[in-house]
Length: 87
Image 1 (cartoon, rainbow, N blue to C red):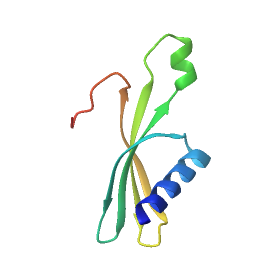
Image 2: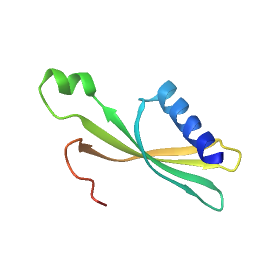
Image 3: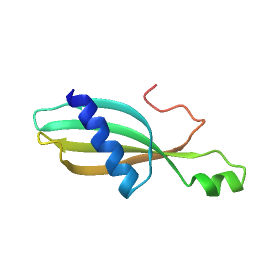
Image 4: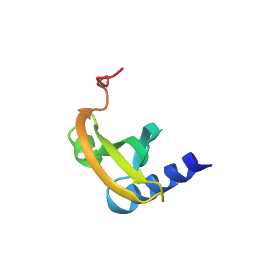
């Protein structure tokens, strides 16, 4: 059940404060809480209007054991059609 709670917390946070989550790519439990990696579509309307590929932002989010988001950081930006580096 905890993973579901983590997913809901992340999706709510990003939906309210940044951009909606496109895809969750990783969830890991750590000694201090949770590490989560997500992708969001950035500059969607701009890219559509210029017939360009969408840009994905890859974010790393950390939650403590109380399911509170303690940090988030954009790791990279890449065109949606490109293959991620770790695949």
